[in-house]
Image (cartoon, rainbow, N blue to C red; front, side):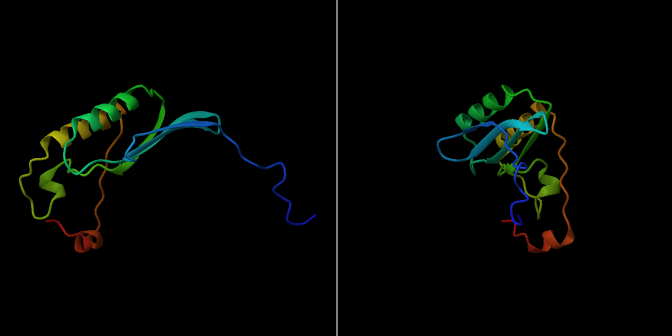
Length: 125
């Protein structure tokens, strides 16, 4: 019967998820092709909030999984000399330090690629 070629090919995987009350992050752990993985998406507040970072760091450090992906908008620059145009001294040092700590904890390699097109369309205030 045409149209039923999906029978027997349904993919199912159990997973668990965590999020904060304000919807600023979602953390998912589960199995993909037999591997235990962690995927997280973060939308950090615009100003440093110790409670947010403490909660997020606490949850992520409890997940010691070999395959991890963490992405999102951390609302801070890791290197102001490179990532701000024009370069300006900012007061985001606490946010920067905490974000770097978060990335180091999960042994994430950070690589920021900027194309000429993105630089032309990005407004930095």
